[in-house]
Structure formats: structure tokens, C-alpha cells
Length: 198
Ligand SMILES: Cc1cc2nc3c(=O)[nH]c(=O)nc-3n(C[C@H](O)[C@H](O)[C@H](O)COP(=O)(O)O)c2cc1C
Image (cartoon, rainbow, N blue to C red; front, side):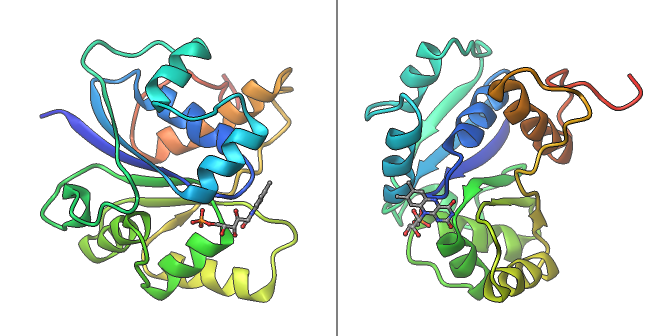
């Protein structure tokens, strides 16, 4: 059966992480469900060349190539009737990349104002992989407590804090070194980034 992944891009800085992650997942014969919060769209338009329109088209413009059996399914975060809102919809993991402090707070408190929060809440209750890439600096005690609570509930906190020991020469390489860690956590084979000792 085809693997299925959910990627949510929220309004924290670092939309490029979400875009690179979706591009990386689209190299597998997988269904990739992508949601962008309203703030996520605004921030992405501010800090990348993404404007509006289909994310797949934008990624192809950036040079991404997709597996012929991969599908990118964009879902509106206000669509509470979408199949990913239900625990009966099976998938191999959800990643919120980047994750705003607002979305982190909602997920850590079990509040489901939109489909991103709901899909994350479903991951926790169904014990499916949920990876959050929180971005803010510095973190307040509230942020830290929200991260602790969501980690205690089963999520993985994977902050976009890249290592420099591989001497990344470009921002893209730096971003991919984090995306590579996400793929590791989703148990996907890849050669996106050098491994220590390789
Ligand atoms: C340019 C810009 C950068 C932002 N960067 C961050 C950030 O790094 N982390 C964060 O938590 N919020 C950041 N925000 C604020 C969020 O976008 C805001 O809290 C928003 O309500 C989040 O909504 P969402 O969780 O539905 O995406 C930023 C806003 C703007 C306009």
C-alpha cells in the first residue's frame, strides 16, 4: 500500500523547511497531504518566492522532481470534513514544519481550531508519529512547557537547529540537513545529507 504523510506549514519563520520536506517526500511513491495555515501562507510569501497557487507547481519551479507515483494533495486547513480529520484515516506520520508557537500551544492543549490542530490531535490519540519543528527564539517558559506537554503525549520535538559539522555551503544544504533528520524519523531511506562518519 502507498505510504501517506501529512505536512503542515504554519506561520513561524522557516517555510523553506516545509517546502523542502514536501519535495523530499515527493521523491517517494507516496501520498503527501499538505496544509498551510493562513499565517503560514503569509510568512511563506514574505520569505520565499512562493506567492499563491498550487504548492506542487511552486516546488517544480524551484527544481524539485517528483516520483511518478507520488501525489501532492493540498487541503484547506478550514476543511474540517477532510478525511485526515478522522482517526480512521491511516497514515505513516505528520510533520508540522515549521511549527508556530500558536499551533504548538493549540496542539499541546488539545484545542482544534483548524484541521492542522485536529490532524495533530488525532496523531496523538492514535499513537501515530507526530513531529513538530518549533521555531521561535528565545523560548518563553510557556513555549517550553507546551513542548514538554506535547512530547509527553508522544510527539517528537525536532527543532530546526542544524549542525555545522558537515560544513553546509548553502542555505538549502543547511535546511536539508534538518529535513534529513525528519526523514530518518519517518523511517525513509535517503541520501539528502551526509551522516557523521560516512
Ligand atoms: C514575518 C513573520 C514571522 C513570524 N515568525 C514566527 C516564528 O518564528 N515563530 C512563531 O511562533 N510565530 C511567528 N510569527 C507569528 C505567527 O505567524 C502568528 O502567531 C500566527 O498567528 C500563527 O498562526 P498559525 O499557527 O495558524 O500558523 C511570525 C509572523 C510573521 C508575520
